[in-house]
Each structure stands twice: as C-alpha cells, then as structure tokens.
Image 1 (tube, rainbow, N blue to C red):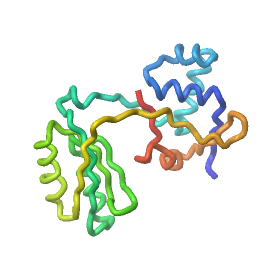
Image 2: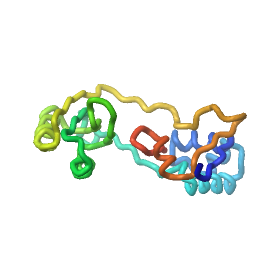
Image 3: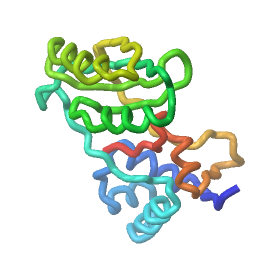
Image 4: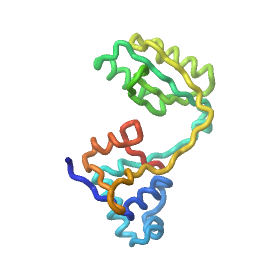
Length: 187
C-alpha cells in the first residue's frame, strides 16, 4: 500500500468546513475547530501535499450565464475502442456546454452533464456534436428539473475511534472521489 495519511477528528472537521465554503479563512476555520491559525494552515498544507485536497472550485449559476436548461446525455459509443475514446472525450470536454463527463459501465458508455440556453440549443448540441459523430451509436437525453448538493465527502467510518486512513497516492485518491475520479472540494 502507498503512503497513507492519518486523518484525525480535527482534519475531518477542517475538511467539512472547507467543503461547505472553500473561501473560509484559515483564521475562521481555526477558531471553529479550536486550533491556532498556524496549526490550521499546516494541516491544510499537509492535506494538499498528500492529495486529500486536490483544489478549489468556483461554482457558477448556469441560468445567470444564459444557460438555464441543464440535461444529462447518456451516450453509447460503438465500437468502444481506445483509439475512438480519446478523441471523443477530448471533444466533449472542450464543448462550452459540457459541465461533467463520466465514463460508465453498463449499456451507456458516457454520461454527459450539459447546460444550454433552451430546448432548441439542446437539440442543436445533440445533433451537431453527438449524433453527427460516427462513433456515437445512441444518445438519450434527460432534462434536469432541480439539483441539490449533498454533504461533504469524508472517509468511511470504519476506522478505529476518529482515525481514517487515505492513500497519499493521488491516483488512489482520485479513484475514491466524486464519481468523476476526483475528490470534490467545492466553494
């Protein structure tokens, strides 16, 4: 097993706070957790270096940017071969409408979260950027009515009394992430 990071209750509390609002200052986090600001800074630095914290994200309201219609596209690629997957993934990730892309098991190969202006824009996107590609066999569309954020991502509670072990290996940390392969720290 790769080097592991021991997360104590203070580390877990810091992670909860920062996942709820990544803009919280170290001084505010330290006060809430009950440690000195310098200790808080050291702990967050250790969590970053070990790969537990991978970054911070700025969340935007798609509707306020003129993209008020969001949808999930289930995409089947045939044939499902490596030489087709790389270019397909890069093209979909480069689309300004794409919010998230997931490679799946099961009948659908990809799930793509998109944000568009309206149904006509969604139709254009599906026809021009998905079904026009030779490797795309099928696209199924689901509109998103509403979305909720869920609680903070924390390690499973199966470790002894307040200690959890996470791998310091970034690849291992990513595989235990948000479904897209990345642990999520949102702001």
